[in-house]
Every structure is written in structure tokens, then in C-alpha cells.
Length: 446
Picture 1 (spheres, one colour):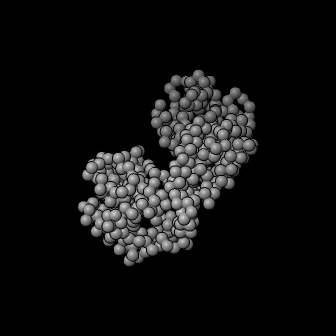
Picture 2 (cartoon, one colour; picture 1 turned 60 degrees about the horizontal axis):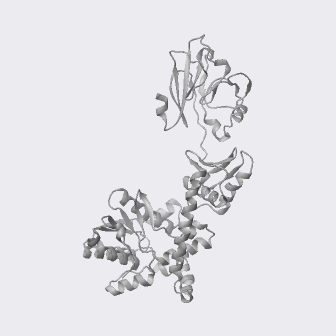
Picture 3 (cartoon, one colour; picture 1 turned 135 degrees about the vertical axis):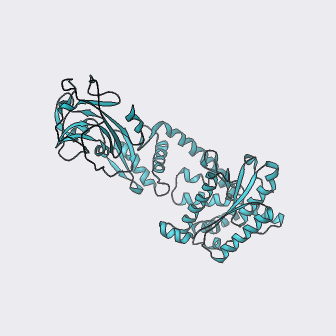
């Protein structure tokens, strides 16, 4: 009998990922044996990848027959993984994993299962640990395969057999007299994981019989340590349109702040220690120093902090000045005529200015080369110098809407008005300017 605790799945809907191989067949029977006792609603899922031709189709037929005999409903999917891999520019194995992951996640999101159980075991975990360490991974890689991957809340993908060896799994099936399918591609050491299994772990087990279980125990402790260090990153990060890392984090925590930033922008496996080092070094460089990251992402020293962001193309628009709500790319702008004069040029939510001081040709537009601004309180300077004084990062300056006539700026919306349109009460044409980030449009109604 396999030593696996299934009590966490009591009263739940569990869908076993069933390929027909020994590991998944053992997992299937383990749940089938305990389903009634634990009130588990059991199903299975099979994905035919279109990789091994007739052999793969026979595996699927084997799975269907197994489920029919056990009276377990089966969700069957098929795909041409080689064609998808070519279309997406990925390897066949990577594409197959991505497709399976999507299928499993959809079963959970569609309410067909609370958990999808996969048959990863101690040998698979050992391969993952060694693979990650050999290619230069951090403590996260040493954590091996996660026992639980959330999809929605506390529902997700589970790996109940992670502490079990292949020998224990095969002995369990032999004791029941159950057959299974063999994937002949598992013998091909051209695949890295097959190489690690056959050329590294098999010889190692001859000398260290419990090496897979010991690697499993090590990986669980590494995972716990790593999760604790990640919990410490909360003090140093701020997530939004940009991912901001505050200074002062100890090196182990700072490196994990970097990894969190990478994941925020979809960089899951494409980064190296060199990318982490490049971000960490920015804290020792001057403001404005940058580092290029995978997938077109950048990091920049932003007055002592480091901001990680995906560059956006500058907006292109030009509206005649007037009342209304204007789409300015990153921002939504509302300009409204006020019935009573405002005593100040700005409030906590909006700017006020005297429209009587605006030329007839005034427009709403982004910044342009040569713009000049006479800020509130006096003092004319180039708009670029104003942004520098206000510590507005260079990457953000194109996104502030301006009220302008020619090269003269009368309002930098969201920041300041020109002294030329200060509210005096003489003209009676007082306008309010309210700026909101896209997605926060409700503020233009307040």
C-alpha cells in the first residue's frame, strides 16, 4: 500500500490526470479505493498530444477502458502539440506541459473539479532538483516540484505521490495485478530528464539507496526556507502599473524582490542570475541608470528606488481645448467649467485655472520638443526642467496631458498650472482639471 494521506481531499471533487503510465494508474486506483470512504467525487482527464502517433492513441484507448471498468467519468482532450509548438515558437515538451496546464486549470475554473491530481513522484522531484541545480538555479529551484499549485483560491493542481518512489508505485500495481502502458520515449536520453533519470539517478541509487527520498526531504526544507524569505519581501515592494522595490532589503530578500518583479511581467523562466544582479546593482548607481530585462522589460533607478516596468509607446492625440472628458492614453482627463471661483490653483484632487488667460488656439496634447512652462508662482523654464524639478521619471513624462498654445504650456494636468492662468476671479471663466489613471475613471465624477 502506498503511504499517502488522502484526507485533505475528503468531500472534494478530484480529477486524476491519467496518461496510462504506471504512476498515473497507481494514483487513479489510490483515489478509486478511497473515494467512497472519503466522499470524494472522482473523475479523470486524459490529454492525447498527437506526438507518438498510433502508440499515443492506444494509450488513450487504454485509459478510456480503465475508466469504464471503474465507472469513473473521463474528460478526454486531444491536440496537435508539434504544430502548436511550431506556431508558438516553443519546444514540444514545453508546449505539451503548457497545454496540459491549461486543460487542468480550465477544469477547475469551469467547476468540474476542486483538484486535478498529477502523478509526479519522488523520482520526478529528484530530477527537477538536479536539473535546476545543474543549470544554476537559486533556492527556489532547489525546492523541486510544488505539492500544490493554486488555480482559484484553495483549488488547484496537487501532487499526492511526491514522497513515493517509482519502485513503491510499481510494487503497488504489481500487488493488485494491474497493467499499465509504457512510453518508449522515456528511454531516449536525448531528453534531459531521461538523461538525469537513467545516467545520474540510477547509478546514484546503487550507492545511496534512499537518495530520492533524501532529495525530497531536502527540497521540502528548501521550499519552506524560500517561502519564508519571499514573505519578507512584502516590506520592500509596491505593485501597480510598475513594480517598485524600495532600498534596504538584505541581499537574499532583494533577490526575491527581483524575481517577484520578473513574474509580475510574465518573465517566468527566461531570466538568469545575471538579470537579478543587474537589478540589484541599480541601487548602487545614480538615478536614471537602467537595466534591460527579458521580454522588453526594463528596470531603472528612480531616485533611490528601483522601478521595473514595461515601456509603453507615447500617446498621440490633440483636442481643441474645451469642456468634456478626454482619452489621453494612460490617463483620462476631465475639464469642467466651475460656477464659483476657486481660491487656489490646485486642490488634493484637481487643478483650477482661469480660462480667460488661454489663447483661442489652446489645445490638449502630450509634450513636444521645445515646450516652455511658466510655473505657478512665477519662473519660466523648459518643460523638461520642470519635470526634473518635480522628480517625474523620464519614462512618465510623455503621458501627462498638457493644455498648450504653440510651445507655451498653460497646465501640466495633474501637476501644476502656469502663472499666466492663475485664478484671480476677474474673468469668471474658472475651469477644473481632473486627471485619473485609466481604470480609475470614477474619480472624474467626484
